[in-house]
Image (cartoon, rainbow, N blue to C red):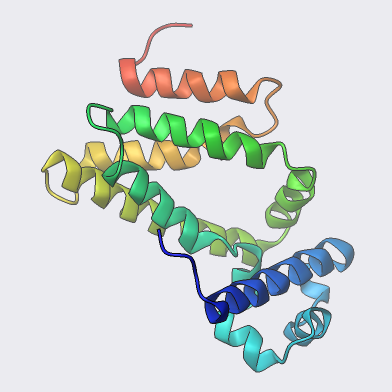
Length: 189
């Protein structure tokens, strides 16, 4: 893997500073009380610079959107030889989602998204796009049509795991139960 050059590092740092500033302000004041100009000022950049990194205010809340989608696709395409798609996705969710779920700001972040209609709508569109991309990668791997319903269902269920397990007393156990269902089918509890 190639180390990013200075320019790429600076761009990534600016992007992260913008996302961090936006989240800080949104949590302090509320989403609707914060302007693009407020965010740019907090990050010490121009609004033009902000728009070079993010298409709009909602995207600042979901700043790792593209990275997450690419990572899910890579999990399918670059899994270990002999590892099933479901097992690779299980490993990825257990390693990634559970760390995010333990983040000290996760409850505040979730409340922000759930209490802001514009963010809910944006998030739903984002997850729909992720579902389509992940489903296409699974279908390609399986050698079936991109609109295969089983691939779409698997992608949808996997991407819904964070919402299904959020707030559970034992999130790891909940994630394992869902993947056991996906692997072995329905069994009476």
